[in-house]
Image (tube, rainbow, N blue to C red; front, side):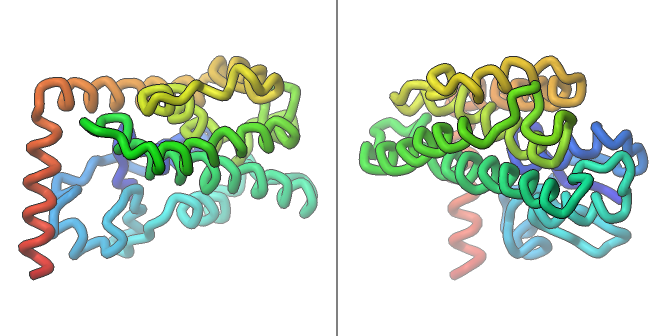
Length: 235
């Protein structure tokens, strides 16, 4: 199998953390050369990564990929010992995926905008702050998100909290993590986990590469070229 992935993609990072934690060695990691082009969208209609290539059968969406991998590589388990424990893990993972990552993904463009849309920042950033407060009441207090061990909840929270800490302040909003005692303690602890630290190093590498492209003006040109190609392909 092959995972089409990218360093700065938080959804890809979620799956990579699962792969590293499970010790899976027969999944190749590759950034698709056509990513962001009409050719990529033609092959992968959703147009986003990660995508898991299963002998030519393409499976998109990080949560779907994560559940698939959990079924075919059940050990070590990243779900619960009971159905109720598994439900809690999935609930916390959903907070990381939808309430943190998704809002931050949509908000990230405001971090590099020449003129910010304050309405977007207030709406999406406000949702992030609100949900960090909710997470503070639900997260584990023993260094892991749930169950006292690394689970699929951590896989979703690590890239989500990375974006909150590193991207949200660039929109003019204050990082809400330090004000949420349980989330702050979790965040400090999970970064010491070897698998989480590996993914965070990749995310930081991707972020620095992106920032350099923005500083040089190359990113704006890339985005304009991609937008023109997509518009031409859909005309």
